[in-house]
Amino acid sequence: MSSLFPALSDPSAGPRPALRFGERALTYGELAAAAGALAERIAGAGRIALWATPGLETAVAVVAALTAGVPVVPLNPRSGERELGHVLRDSAPAAVLAAPGDRLPDAVGALERLDVDVRAREAYAPAAGDDEAPALIVYTSGTTGPPKGAVIPRRALAVTLDALAEAWRWSGDDVLVHGLPLFHVHGLVLGTLGPLRRGGSVRHLGRFSTDGVARELGAGATMLFGVPTMYHRIAEALPTEPELVKALAGARLLVSGSAALPVHDHERIASATGRRVVERYGMTETLMNTSVRVDGEPRPGTVGVPLPGVELRLVEEDGTPLAAWDGETVGEIQVRGPHLFTGYLNRPDATAAAFTGDGWFRTGDMAVREGDGQVRLVGRKATDLIKSGGYKIGAGEIENALLDHPGVREAAVTGEPDEDLGERIVAWVVPADPGAPPGLDELAGHVSRLLAPHKRPRVVRHLDALPRNDMGKVMKRVLGQDGAQGDA
Ligand code: MCA
Ligand code: AMP
Image: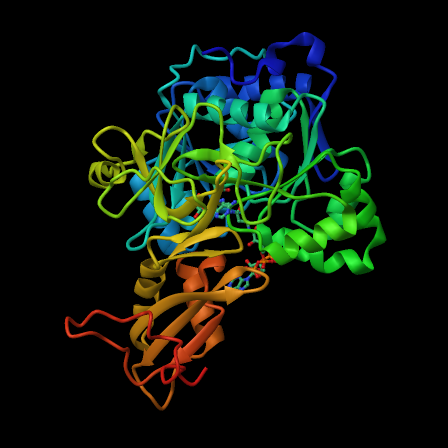
């Protein structure tokens, strides 16, 4: 496969803007030189961690690692001690890349630290890359246990970005704006590597705000990427922010993904700006599977059609493929193609369970096909996976963290609908001492310290006992129904 970033080797692209984070920016020429210098320093390293703050250094570091052919493990800089400990033990990186001045927690500080110098200058010389070799290892939550590292090869990055380019007519003339975190596929692969593969540019907001979106789309940016929570906040702001209305109305493409964008928010944005948000559907393990095409008809509630190269089918519980495209028959989505990851790091058992014998990946997402082939997602197979703010969060992981709190005797975690976050995390807790039940601040702080702030419960409900069936299994579906409301 040829270079992942042709524009970095093209002298004529040198003066063009590549990256901008706040006031700091690099042209293609500067990025090639900085990434070239760092690639030389890390060449031959087995695997390298990246302290993935939303800054210029993170983008330079990941380009450098891809240039050197060194697999990168992006770390959430807000990870708590247990989550970070797990990721570092599991991925065993040789060193950590960080921005100069970033303070690293002890667990990371034990690794050799390499500061990313965005002003360094060396020739850009991509290593002859094996396309099947691991490029990124991205940690993603399951229903139980700690997160698993999805090993994503170079081949999948190239395939998914080119498929999106075709579906969206995404070109080097596009300027993308977003405020997504850089330790997940959405912000890192689509939002950072995507524009660079096209030879276009990205402006990162540092942190999402409707002001930032209005400013950048009003000043030449052509595309916006966001999770539904961001579009919900945009929809809320439109009535009072005329600049935002104008900016969105002038954008070429507004794209939402990572979770379902509610029809109400679709409609509010469309009626205020005349623009329809385009949804695409993907997963850390599969990168992008489907999208509404720029020449297609965006229909709220659907995530479009399979991208070029993606085989997609719906199957019944027993694995029998469904033939019906009737908008009604629900099946699990399975996908196959060159956009898939290669497996979970150190988890051959989980990898084997995720695929069928003939190479179809089981997504766990339930959907129907409309008569015209569009995919409509209707839910997930596992109720123990929660999507909050676009982050996937496993209930089991939070339950284990809660059980480590001395004030908690039993715990169950569920997601309940939330206007802003899509779902909010609810902790159902049987206190060790009914006279002194641990409150929300206490448990949210505890989970944030161990795991990550986005995994913290937003609501705590106290119960005398968890509802269990005859086998002793917690009946989560009963929680939240009348009679199991707890004392909030
Ligand atoms: C709050 N904070 C705390 C605590 N409580 N910190 C420590 N302990 C606590 N108890 C801090 C937070 O860290 C944060 O800090 C601030 O308070 C607000 O936190 P929160 O309320 O959680 O955040 P938010 O403002 O509501 O964030 C909404 C968001 C965010 C911006 C939409 O959820 C987000 O960035 N989502 C994107 C998720 C994403 O990219 N998913 C992609 C994965 P501070 O104020 O300093 O920040 S899915 C994927 O990749 C697939 C392939 C796909 O399809 O896309
Ligand atoms: P993650 O494992 O964090 O990469 O999240 C992947 C999951 O996000 C998928 O399995 C879906 O459940 C969900 N998802 C991604 N995009 C969409 C979308 N456009 N609509 C609904 N759910 C989505």
